[in-house]
Image 1 (tube, one colour):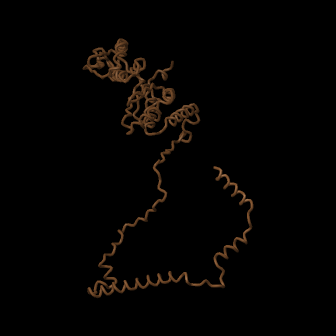
Image 2 (tube, rainbow, N blue to C red):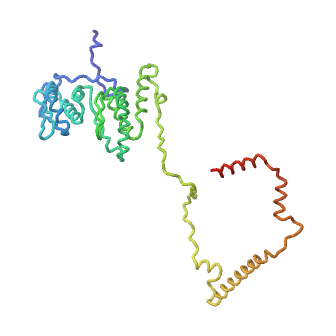
Image 3 (cartoon, rainbow, N blue to C red):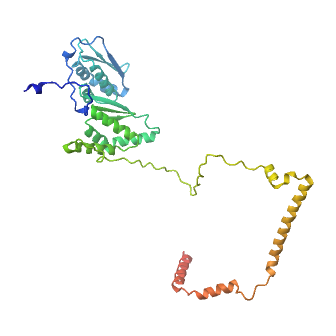
Length: 344
């Protein structure tokens, strides 16, 4: 092998275009020969229904943790799991990984999956979804939408992201590579915000196919990806007659005229009491005379003889009927319909 192949990648402070493509060098015991200064420990509680499973699996947990020079304790009285560092522990971050492992096991993740967190390139993410939706029935529906029929949607998410995903209660536990965890979090949050997971699944499938084509490596992929359109239509009944809003004006409406203003405009304000009464009496007399005239016209209406020159309304109707041709088919149809109604 040449010297160029054995050289390690140089560390630079310059911005990197694709951080996921970077290879992080492994942390070895030679990098920390003195070990840790103090003991660190983490404890987590577990529900009662997990007690039997954890009791059976605990020897395997101790064995897995001992490979990294850690201690594990199970307290069945208190209902807690504890992980601690020892004097031989040389990796300062392994205690965090062990804490994540016991957290996952407390959230019903099987030990075979949870122990994978102890690997360097695998992490975990616990997504809290309980407070994202207010109504409980909506929350249950959206959570079920994430799982899919017979768990098909969840299985497709696992295959595309290379992560183990477990939906339980108010949380979603994900376990896998860091890039996959980011994708799982985006899918879960979008689903709880009423975006169907099929859109994100389709996008991941299209991206996987586009990655195979080297010609499209440096191009924008947004034109290939599906676009989500929000079709949240209000179910509120709309009124038949909608009131049109008046045009907005910054000036307030004119103040309505008071009784005194109207009297000032007509000149009534300056009249004395007798003159006002006289004026009202005159107005009454005018109204009465108009009403009497209308009443007299209505009474005399029957006694007015019709003019002989002009044809009467009945004569007009007869002439109009004579002009129209008799529609025999329409008349038959009417008779048939009338017979049917009589029978029923």
